[in-house]
Length: 345
Image: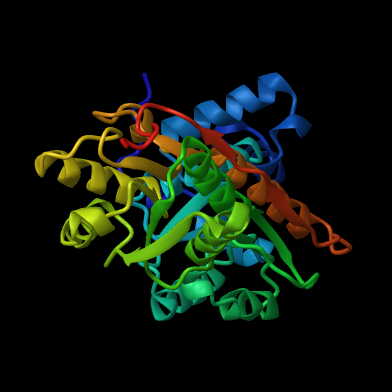
């Protein structure tokens, strides 16, 4: 039995070729284009690689090829399950193409996003997917100027100068409030925060739904959450509960499910029931929405599909210099569960 070498860093392709009794070019083909090599020869080369403990120098390979076998993905907040699911979709598409994904978390900070774009350019990634911070689209232009294809994800790009993949958030906000109006609610609150285009579009859709009601019945007040997470939802619940009972809305539409889950917790702790006292609608339909103490009505986004389609567009652009830019927009879907009901008279 042959004992593998203890240090792979000193093992060269030439040594692998000698051990396997083949040319250096054959070893290179086994590593990069194994379909060109006959099966017995592939097996012999791979056995030599295992015996010698050879690990290819990926940095050197990237320098020769001019690009790496990776994609970059920059999201706003990886602790939000919505972005985790989007990242899974990107990873699935990248893996099918034999690529890996470098995941970066911008914390909705344009400066941090810019640093990650620079890092990914330095890493010679094949392309970058960006959920832009604070609706800034400067970074995609920066990456594109360096020859790196860039796709905007979860953001609609209004010009034909690049690709984007998004969901119609105005329609999503409209269907959420339309559902509450149809149940008979006339005092509705929208809970959101931050400066993202997605949140603004959801609010715009909510206001359009209220404005379209007969004789203007139906009003939407705004409550600002300090953050778009469970803690932000809890704090927003404090603002809601501070209102006099006669002014308190009978239904709340939240900019995402995490805010809605925080509200649900705090309302329950205060003795109010959902939907008995207050109906509640979230957005994203993350996995936790269906398994909450009161299953949450939510506007569903095709989270993994967003990532898969965006990655496919990116790979297409990286491979084809004549690629035609497209703006893909998905339709949201309202999923009705136990958190919404008719208002108590």
